[in-house]
Image (cartoon, rainbow over all chains, first blue to last red; front, side):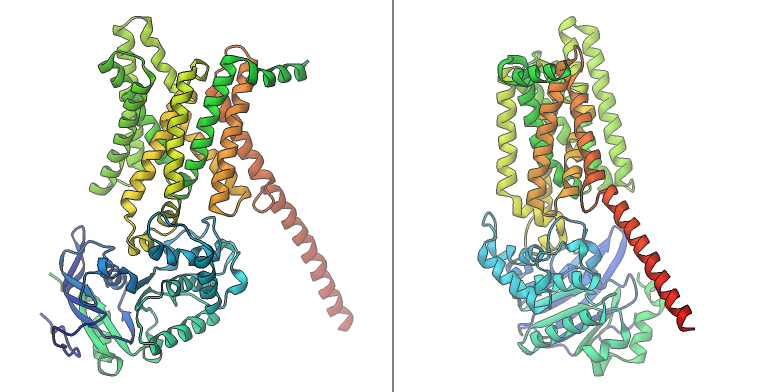
Length: 256
Length: 316
């Protein structure tokens, strides 16, 4: 068995952190997707999750929100279970996960970020509209509020998703490849928004595919390959050796 | 001559007892299935609706077998239970085996429908002429609708609309982005089940008018037609309900003009005609305008390219 927790200094158990993962395993049918993960996400950092295809990157953030069934282990969000902390977390799913032909406009999608606060039965109103409009402004799409979502470019669609997360006004952002296949303006806009959020002390966890930009954009990195290869500050763990371990094909086969 | 006939039918809606209830019952079906069908369409569950309606058939036979009456509420209950059961079987097959959804739908649809036919023919063989009436649920027999039926249908439809209006926001978010809805804490599975339940009610409403075989058209066609014209979910639901309602009324009027023409198929043809018109003539997505735009762009491009190369030549 290889050494798993290189670079990760264990904080004391009683410290309250945005996300704590203990002995997490997730299996789809009989295939393990994540195996025995132990991880602490620090507050106020830009955190990248990297790893090859099928390494369980999306599964990890979905597991935090209870979107996939957990086989073993425990996850806490600010020391409580996720179901009690929903208002502190915003999820930005992969752009390709929804049907953009859905009959609605950009503002309406952003407004959905406020449904959680509205709860059951209460309807969106002029206040939620106004708030959604402000969030659209922040991502530079004020003029596109009434635009059919199917008529937006890929980058604009991604920014609508980010605006929806902003509308939730959370402490933690869980984002699934928001920079995948977007134009330069979108990448710049999203990064500058996230940078400001980080300065405000928010925690950003992002599944990221582009290894070239990891050390440029992020403070912290989690390297996955179904097992946890490494998790820690970029300078300490984003090394050649760890990358080789994360992306080596046979590594994945070594899981029993 | 023809005009006179149409006029007399129009007047008939208000005066003729039978025609009034046939048209009303068909309109109730069209409005309900039109609105709910939008969700079926957007959730890509059109064939699921088809399986549900086919699965309702054995329920009718079994309800009759046990109760021994042709009380319409009882038969509808049997139909609803089996439609629901068919839906659960489909979901069960896809989640516990390697069989994919399309195959699972095929299995449910044909097995339940076959079971239904077996039960109906059995009933026909053991009983007198009174059992013969049950096969009208295959293609519907709106002409047999009476006042009490229409009142029942109206109550069921009203129930559907209450659920739809109360949970509109939740249905919308669960349909557009299920994972996100779940992250907010909405129980998307239960919402899906609730939506399936109201669609089952719509199917049951349709039993009398279009029957189990053609029911799926009433779910898909109005929604697909409305989608051509409309860009918001709420207005799509409203327009789809209007299309469904119109086709119900127009269909029952047309069928009343010809002796022995059954109403259900005519309603389905009417809504299909509306869909056809929408596909061709809608301004944004219609074939006609797409073709015209393409042609205009092509000519515009040709003349531009012509100009550019002309300029190039004169410069050279």
